[in-house]
Each structure stands twice: as structure tokens, then as C-alpha cells.
Length: 114
Figure (cartoon, rainbow, N blue to C red):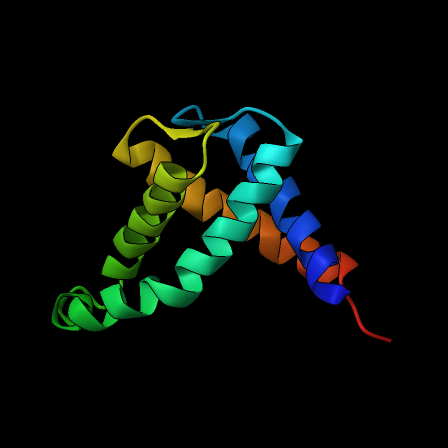
């Protein structure tokens, strides 16, 4: 049951990032929920492989290349979800950063276990 609440929080984080970042668009709340689910799956299944393959570049860039990997994962999720459109690399880049920051804030403040 906790994962449903986390999914709702991540969907709201995507909607907040859609409002703040002009480089991508989400067509509604259901699309945001589906995008949050697909983004979670992409981050679980695809992103570790990409991180492993780009490990030398990540080490040389002192970890900053992970931001590029996050933008790529964001773009992959947009390819899989109709109604979730990324218009540019910078839209994916800033969208991924804003989404993760807002999601972190929501989960830290609202998803506590007592």
C-alpha cells in the first residue's frame, strides 16, 4: 500500500516539474501517474545497465555524468508513455533534476513511518 502513496507523490512531483520546466509536457494526472510508474521501472531495470556501461566517463567527470544518465532515463520514459513528451535534452535534464528534488521533498515530508 505504501508504494501507491509513493507513486502518487512521484506523479505530483512530475506535475510540479511540468509546471516549472518548459522543456517537457505531461497531459494530465493519469499520464503523470503512468509516467511515474514507467520512470520507476526504467530507473530499476535500464538505468543500472547504463550506469555500469558509462562508469569510466562517470569517474572521469567526478560523478556529474550521472545527471546525463538521469536525463536519458527521463527521455526513455517519455518514449514509452503517451502524453508525456520531452522536447529537448535540457527539458529532460532539468525535468529529471526538478522531479527528483520535488519527489525527495514530498517523500521526506509526507511519507514518514511512525
